[in-house]
Amino acid sequence: MVADLTRLSNGLTVAIDPMPGARSASIGLYAAVGSRSEAAGKGGLAHLLEHMVFKGAGGRDARGIAEAIEDVGGSLNAWTARDQTVFHARTLPNDVGLALELIADLVRAPKLDADELEREKQVILSELGECLDAPDDLIHDHLFEAALGDQPLARPVLGREKSILALTRDDCLDWLATEYRPSRLVIAAAGAVDPDAILSLAGRLFGDLEAADPPAIPTAAFVGGICSDRKAAEQTHLAFALPGLPATHDDAPALALFSQAVGGGMSSRLFQELREERGMAYSIYSWTQGFADTGLFAVNLSTDKARAAEAMALARTCVSRAAEDLTDVELDRARAQVEAGIIMALETAQGRADSIARSIEIFNRIMTLDEMLGELRSVTAYTARSAAQTMLSGPIALASIGGKLALAA
Image (tube, rainbow, N blue to C red; front, side):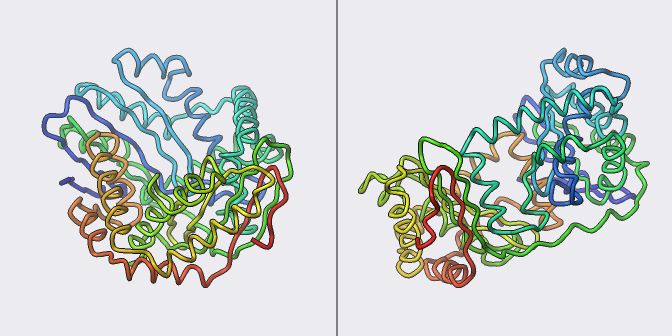
């Protein structure tokens, strides 16, 4: 992976990664801002704005936007996260310019019609209802709430019904004007792309954005706590989290490999001990997520209500035991899985664009594949155990849906 990085005079970053032999292209605008930047009472604003720009922009209505990209066989979509909002497109080589023009229209010339806003709120409320009916999704929001308390990073990306209904057109306009500053924006393109053409187009479409500083993003710290949701469910869904590491921390790769070894696959300790050997859980896995200032290591599982306390206790014991005796064999297996996942993801244009944009957001530069693999290969079983032992000394967050939370677990 050898990508070119250019910063426009206003601070916007353009990263281009041509892929010899590719016959399609991916291009996106990656904004390093998400729901954690929303003010109190404005929950769901970042996500609502992401929806609303597709309702009309740059002289096209919603149908016109859809037809413009689909007339050339392409696709255009978006997503919102706690610390990122992305507008991305996939096209054939000759239509990359059209894709970037459409994306520019979305964030620079949206209509934000008031009547459309009220209709789209109902769509988002339906999406929220679907999430509330899906324990596998809802448990993540509960866990963030338990881990981070009332800090902005803890709030759900979708927001809540009350806050969504209260959002206005002016809220959307203010969000775009203040949060989408050039220093937070990355245009990333990969695949069958012409670097000179994309750089020229990026300058024409975004070069006149005012180079003003965006508002500071609220900081966060892992505090720990409990979130117990007694709503009816067929299974009890449980999760616990421990203080993870910021994305830039030197030990983040070690903790990632520890997580993979403990609960990242069918050969992991959690899967083997709780599912295969004891039949306690159908679904069980661990994961890590790092932000600029904090992180989470977490374990999620679903089990029968009668065995919830036993399953939670065993899962925690399994993690604690691995922090003491994780073996070289387990680490090597985890490393092979993570390395393969990275390499496979980078075989696609979308994967390349996502990777280089995220690297710029986190490290302010593009990490090469050799650097990524080098970091993973430098991890030993000792350093993985040490990273785990450090997190085990911190507070814990517990979340549950559909049963009494086993506080003693």
